Length: 456
Ligand code: AMP
Image 1 (cartoon, rainbow, N blue to C red):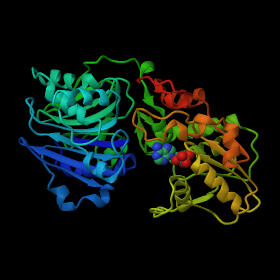
Image 2 (tube, rainbow, N blue to C red):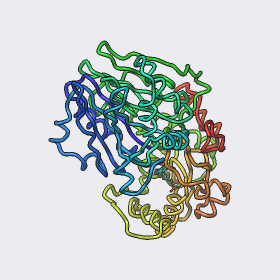
Image 3 (cartoon, helix red, strand yellow):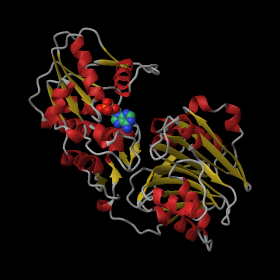
Image 4 (tube, rainbow, N blue to C red):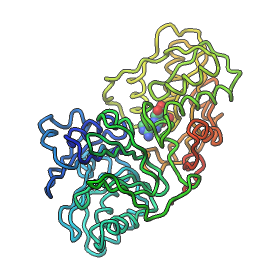
């Protein structure tokens, strides 16, 4: 998963991108990058490992001013995962000299056709710097025949239609934003000081003090001209019901204090919790606790609807840092323990915990163990999402199918495995009903629930 920002025409484009990147940091912590552009000259890109707050100095950011700037935070999915790959594959990517001029790109998503396009380009003498799927976009651009900007953009994006992309680009000295026709990943448009800002989430607009205009629609390309944003839709408009927006953005990924697909994220999560309360009305418990922070809103919804008492059960350590325990499985469990610690005074109680999702089941298993270790009498685990049974091909970094608890176990088997006294999930219809109720939304990808991949 990644976060992207593009700004043009504000008083300090570099600073606005930098501010925006902080607000989408949760979308990628492997690395970050920035590039700016003015009067035909690029400054950067500057790519760094790690988180934005520690990666760049104030002087570097102030030096990035100009007419347009792009930024990116990266969570490696398609490309490599080791430190070297993360640095090499950091974005924005820039080709300064092609027969169609320069192009800079920052991308969020997974381009399904990238491996084939890469093979095809290599066969005709193309070359690649890293392992990121985004590089094929630059090659598409370089190969296009340049009769007009709109045609150039169409030719650049046409070969990657079968995939998930939200993009910010600098092409022809203009800021450009684009979203694939399925609308897997989010992208929004805002404005500030006579200029415009594109961002993965509305929280980035808030942080940069830009005001929200609207989301970039699936299949839309926005070109920010001097006169303002202009739209083209060369790949047609997909009716809402046929779109494939990502549900997991609502369940876990997007920040709760923003809008996603024009709908309040926290309100959807609370509705997930309310549905859990209606679905399991007879659970007896002494208290209900959230798995912080991702389970907070669903827990509030559950408590509102059930009337059961909310308590803080776990304290989250924001400075937990790294754990030096191997192998991978034990390391994950140790990380859960390092991050979350149970409150005192829980002995003999029955505790209901609400979390946003169960993926490998490490978190739930470890939390149940920790509660039982401190003498909790019973633990009910409620998951405010459907069983995550198939890996994501569209940009969410999840385990392979074999590591997903719900791929090989039914809920009762998982309950036994995690040691809970009760385990409840939402089903597909219930999850989809929440977005319908809160935002009137339809048209979601359900692949992580049923393996029905809309784009192979
Ligand atoms: P697991 O421990 O593998 O069952 O994962 C579930 C927990 O990890 C939940 O508490 C989620 O908040 C969190 N989570 C879910 N998906 C992801 C992801 N793609 N990256 C990091 N954390 C995640």
